Amino acid sequence: MKRILQLSFLLLIISGLSCRNEKPIAKVIDGSLTFSVNQYKLLAESMKGLTDQLPRSLDEKGKLMTAESHWWTSGFFPGSLWYLYEYSKDTSLKSEAEAETMKIENEKFTKTSHDLGFMLYCSFGNGLRITGDEKDNEVLLTGARSLSTRFRANIGCIQSWGSSAKWQCPVIIDNMMNLELLMWAFKNTGDSSFYRIAVIHADTTMKYHFRKDFSSFHVVSYDTTTGKVQARQTAQGFSDSSAWARGQSWGLYGYTMMYRETHLGRYLNQAQHIADFLINNQNMPEDKIPYWDYDAPGIPNATRDASAGSVMASALIELSGYVPEKEGKKYLKVAERQIRSLASPVYMAESGRNGNFILMHSVGSIPANSEVDVPLTYADYYFIEAMMRYRALLLKSR
Ligand code: GLY
Image 1 (spheres, helix red, strand yellow):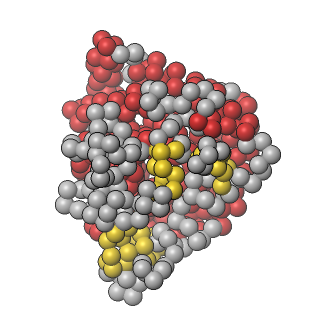
Image 2 (spheres, helix red, strand yellow):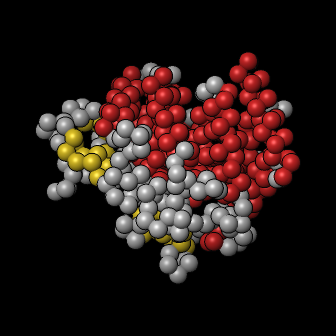
Image 3 (tube, rainbow, N blue to C red):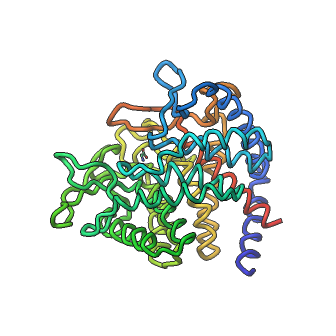
């Protein structure tokens, strides 16, 4: 109760400060969520007839790019629809969310990808949270079992990508996000093997993925025989030693979530160290939307990655609830700036434009010259989630 009162006071101060020069954050969020509802209705409309496809981005000609359910981003569109239904109570969004979610069901059997957490937890996980529909339990549990088959006990990690001549057992920082599905399975079955896999993976990642300054490598590959680190490199970042922006946000979100699920202090410390690395980074722009890599060449003219900003905002809002008031205030202030920036015309599309995605200016992979400065479903998803989380804090503080 004391914590809620402190947080309420903090929010009152923050919204009071904002009021002097800017629109109150509550209004920014309500306006942006209302816009998102309308924009996603248009996106859903444009998906009619594409029964085995989900939206992904825009191609070079500005045409809608879709993907089948096995692409790692498949869960974000249905997940966003669930959040927007939760916000608006508009039952047409519920029907869309249900239909889009069902497109992914078969992925519960997938054992060749580590992305099952992204795919299933964002879609079925949100559906279950909002509707309590029992049938979602089976999908999530089957998915968690499939994901567990990728755990390599001698390494202590879930394998991300397949083995190649370059990497025997590649594990990417993004994989921290998939642990939420395992923690759900543990809570709902009591089967401690899910907990054990998630905790061992998080501990191994903490040991080998992070540098002294708490930035992280994108890819750590392990030797499948000895279990030792084989290589530390990048796939989507500027260089092996750089801090790829979205990867840093995945790490922040992942350890914050693992602290929520386990209450283990080492995960909270890790999340705070990552947050502080990002917040104090000399290359963090004024509007708090990161360049695609904190060490990208050409800063301040380097491309921004709105997705890195939206994942970070959502994580910081959650993290602010687990730390003493002073730190909480610091995290919320950055998250609020990120929401305001993303909600501005610099990043937020005009109605009916941008392929009906919400945000512009994200980056898939610059080294692969793929999805550069485009809308991406996960930028939208975590932006909506960040706004829902901030809104929930505001409602609680009333
Ligand atoms: N998980 C892949 C990415 O963040 O691009």
